[in-house]
Image (cartoon, rainbow, N blue to C red):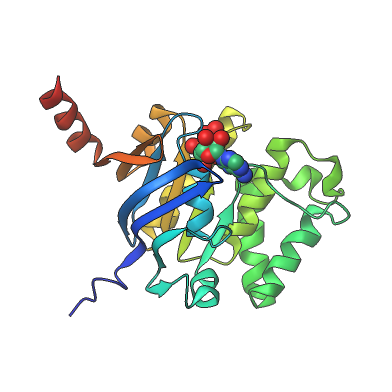
Amino acid sequence: MSDPVSDLAIGLCKVHKSYGRHVAVQGLSLDVPRGQLFAFLGPNGAGKTTTIKMIVGLLRPDSGEVIVCGHHLGSNGLAAKAQLAYVPDQPFLYEKLTGREFLYFVAEMYQLSRVERDRTMSELIRRLDVAEYLDQLTESYSHGMKQKVVLAAALLHRPALLVIDEPMVGLDPRSVREVKDLLKEHTHAGGTVFMSTHTLDIAESLADRIGIINHGQLIAVGTLAELRQKACREH
Ligand code: ATP
């Protein structure tokens, strides 16, 4: 019999977060089943990054509960974090490592075998077209180059949940296409993707389900068809 909690990649229950007196996320509840590509859509300042940081354990909610792959972040944070990979909107790399050294470091942290590391790395390097600069120090990389290497690092260990903040910002059109394919393939292989975006186009073209957030509140959630029906009923 299926277990409703562990069948979820993400469970948010009445999550609330303020910065001082400013309420960034209010009473947000949301379930994302495993194997879905979920797009979190909203304008600047809506609360997307704050929600994402609570999902990946970088921010603690003031109240409410966050469950990742069956583990409560509050009481079992390490187990939850072991299941996920996070690509922030400002990709972080160790500047004095080359891209290849960074990928080796990540592979070692996740205890990938050398064979598995080399196989997965060579596919990601080819598809993301990063070979040309992979042996340069990352301090010389552009935003898009960093973004692609961080994404390769996130996909390297095939996380159960990939959380990715604004994945397409700063990428050229060819890279956007490739990243879209990689994200879709990740869910087809059983993984879950939770991504934020400002852009309806990106959400429409990729997502199994879309959640719309504004002023810290989830105002609609569903498939594209469900959201269209809802919009028609309301107008
Ligand atoms: P964007 O699309 O512009 O990245 P977002 O939807 O990710 O926006 P958040 O970054 O979560 O939105 O911000 C939500 C609200 O919280 C905004 O009003 C923002 O100004 C505020 N905020 C975010 N981080 C902080 C912080 N560290 N201190 C104070 N206020 C913050």
